[in-house]
Image (cartoon, rainbow, N blue to C red; front, side):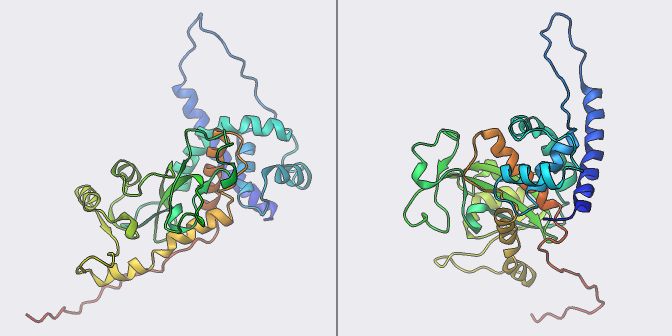
Length: 315
């Protein structure tokens, strides 16, 4: 488990954002019309910043279950940091209220800036899918009924069996910073133009991906939006001319696969014990925010050297 200084640092960052967010909400909040039904809105004993900090720190620790983390760390070792902590059942009940705040924090403070070099992949292409239940319990699982779908990844059918799951599509830059993410069902094609359009709407430059994104229509769509999709070719396809820089960066596509691996094995983004769809989404957002707080991310040391040398070409 990391130090209390790191927890304080995360809390200060989140608290500053929550104060700005509350001011914006008060400015946009409309005056309640007379005659409308009023709802009780009693504040909790814990602040919004404390609740978000607890959610983020869970994905930075080594605990596999949130219950053990909350009861052993929050209510015991960190009782001086969170003196007015809620009971575990109450915390699980109210955490879904902070979906909008956590999502806005991830978008405004967590995501990086596009540099013109981007890497795109989905969780199924790197490791396993986001499974929401064990294979043996698919027919009895009710939490994600009509949401999760069976799908196939590049790793196969998991020894011939299906898995109810989702796909998390990610885009990062050469610094290891997340640029965009998109959650779909497990049986959605990676080359779906609708999803790729939303995933890359804020990007520019070149996007490096694996052979699963090979599509002429997708390449033309991205090219029309000012982006160039660069992938390897399949064995039964003719080779094409590629710049040396693109060929080298295509070999470094493992950076996005490393991020997927860290999200699964370090940030606990995947487990099969979800009891509600809302908390499943909160778990994904918390893991993505926690990754943004990593002191060291997988990155590429790319430096452009400008020289006055002339380029010689033979006709």
